[in-house]
Image 1 (cartoon, rainbow, N blue to C red):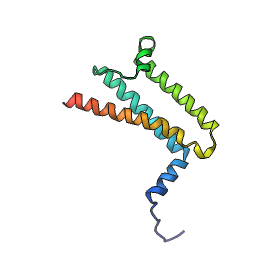
Image 2 (cartoon, rainbow, N blue to C red):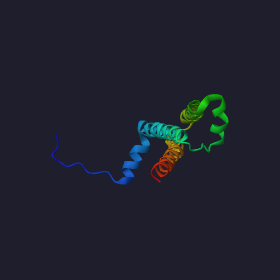
Image 3 (cartoon, helix red, strand yellow):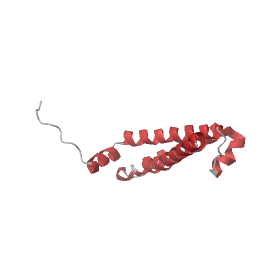
Length: 119
């Protein structure tokens, strides 16, 4: 046991630690997945339009939920394969590369929903 105070990590060290921890990266990716899907479905239910042409093409056959989930599962499958194929030092780029666009889309959906609901 020590009486020393823990030294806070610098932001760079914290980022390096987070990027090296695959569980954190995949958790963020799945949170972005959920955010994007839920906000898209909510927006569609409020009369907003889907802009992704792939999702638009799949909606008639699969419905909105099926189209969104199917497309995202394909992306996740490709990401998991890439995760296993790449050398370990580059693997962190895979979940980040998936999470960023999904997270941005979810945040943009949220903004559009808030503007639509609250004017």
